Amino acid sequence: MRDLDLTTLRLYVSVCEAGNIARAGEKANIVGSAISKRLAQLEHQVGTPLLVRKRHGVVPTAAGLTLLEHARGMLDSAARIERDMEAYGAGARGQVRILASVSAMTESLADDVATFLQKPAHRTIQVDMEERVSPEIVRGVREGMASLGVCWDAADLGPLQSRPYRTDQLCIVVPKGHALAQRKSLRFEQTLDYEHVSLPVNSAVQVMLQRHAAQLGRALVHRVIVTNFEAALRVVRAGLAISVVPREVAEPIAVRYGMKLVPLAEPWARRRFIICFRDQQSLTPAAHLLVEHLASKAAP
Image 1 (cartoon, rainbow, N blue to C red):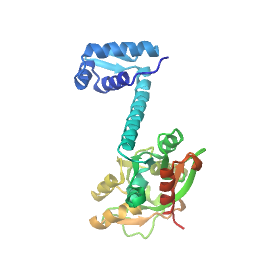
Image 2 (cartoon, one colour):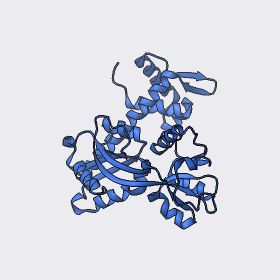
Image 3 (tube, helix red, strand yellow):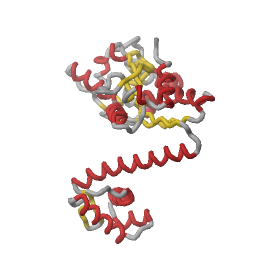
Image 4 (cartoon, rainbow, N blue to C red):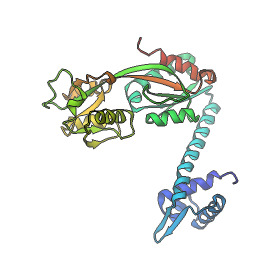
């Protein structure tokens, strides 16, 4: 199969997202017939139908959905290449991309990177960060999408190398006046009688909580599922549910709004974060400097 054309892939993604060739053409300022011709050539190139024509538009076939996923990844990679080269053209002499968990990003990573970049010797280094769940972080670093990953040390790193980073403490956040608000500490099992506000099911925290609930022969009851800790705290503040949140994230907001933090008395509630990478020897000078800076923040 010949090399796939990025312009055609970009149009294909646009058609799939719009569900209509004409609308995609208007967005790209290209006539629909030209897009149809490109899509026909693409189907011939891959050897299978990619779109099913419906009365009011198009929908991707099973093969089309697979190509859509790959096309988005290729376009994202191409965009990163363009940004990186523009950064070098603008004078940046170092480029480091980090994939990080929501906990690391929310708690301390952004501040630690900012401190690193404020040093005069690092002014020509550019650091890009993107939030991902732990399995995606490990895969992204392994496949070369990023130089560094920052995630919980419970992640399956496979062949990746790592250095210690910061730690945090999981706690239970409850609204003022809740039945658990006066407790000095709580076992996880004691929280399972109440509805929780949870992060997405593939997040590191959620996977761990589901696993421990199953080991207890119980179920974790979700009342609300949100995408970040800040949203979880808003739901708790409204009195709709309780939540398991890192103390480092919850404390400033809880104090402001009168919510109560109760330490989670479980050995796994004290979490250790790591910086992972493919190989210490292959790190660029900029990435090596950043690893040393972040590793210096590790607890003794």
